[in-house]
Length: 259
Image 1 (cartoon, one colour):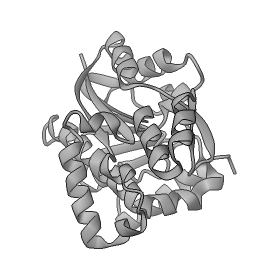
Image 2: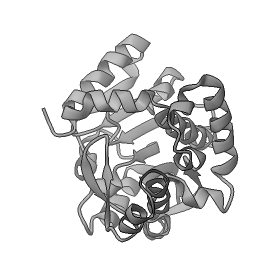
Image 3: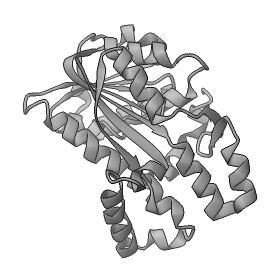
Image 4: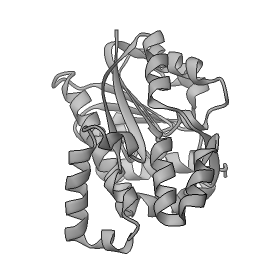
């Protein structure tokens, strides 16, 4: 079992949490828009670091062809089981590949390439090569979606839960910690990634900042109430594309088109 596989149960619990559900709902909104922009024909979609395919299996249900690439076999096994349950195993390919192995995914011209919460775990200095790898497997006119944690959101979240001293310490850190996977990750800014994308022919089309309200509300118990959650999600949808609110979300998502 790999290091990531050890956290399968924590991942399942996080997906079911209110804050996890908010993340997935907002990201799905933007990804749905990107997919819709490519027309109604079946698309070829690659999910890099896709774990169990939780974010992208819905597109296989809608008739698209999906490849999920992740180094953690345990996550892929859970994804395979879910694909069988959904009756879409014939539309999904699972491969133990990471960003360094994309040439082995079986396609070189995907319509949509998804890379969510992956780049921050890569080694220092890897960003330019990683973005170039994503561009290489995206067809001209295709779309790339990237999601990373937002440093500003992490600082404000720390403030609301641990106070000003902890927030000041977070402000000075070069890394941030994933509590689900118990792993340190690099801090990458939206500007840094958008600039790197442009250098490899990926032109920004839109971006959102997600989990603004959720992470400023320290009362996590209230978020489990269905009515409260619905109000919170509606507010997140108002905030996520509007300045200045989106700038302090817990994460950012950028969609770009390959020229």
